[in-house]
Length: 241
Ligand code: GLP
Image (cartoon, rainbow, N blue to C red):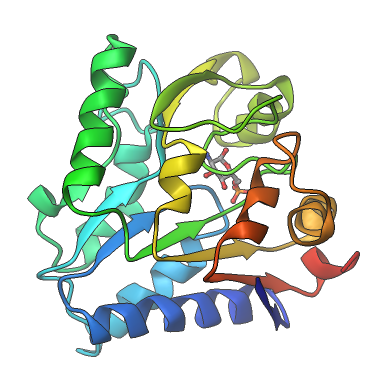
């Protein structure tokens, strides 16, 4: 793992956007694995700014998002489909047909997850996978467990994730209890992984990811075994490192 120290959130976002830009410039038809949450918003804003200046071209890029809440329609304002349109896709020249997010609106979990797995495998997995990290060390929606997950699957969200994500909903009761997420094995299949983390709340998870034992109790710890993983974190998130 390569750990890059950023001064603050803005610096983390710029550094992460630089790494993603390099991928797009070197391989215009690259496959990007994308993430949701508050952490990547600044990275997406930076990419949009560079696109608007004419420095980036998304015409041939395709994207596969990590996860989606189960039971939300694509137009639900809390869905990750909506999040991605609002925070990136609607502002760059990406072809909507090249963007993919698990289909949370399909109640048939097995069908939705295996269709997504086949689609990600068919393109040969992401060239670069962007990841945030949950306060409890989750990646995508792979929650702490007694084993590492494999392909895309349906998960029950932990109480701590429901609480953490409730800030984006009117009430904690509105947070869906389940999600479809790429599995750990799928995430590890990406050729490069870029983890971003900001703020004190992430300090323990970032420490466990980088220096703790490799254990499904901290799903992000498996990234220690990836041969090309870069962590860009700000000072607050690195206080324990
Ligand atoms: C959600 C997402 C994760 C994300 C995590 C952290 O649970 N499924 O992909 O990394 O939240 O979110 P935030 O960046 O808002 O702290």
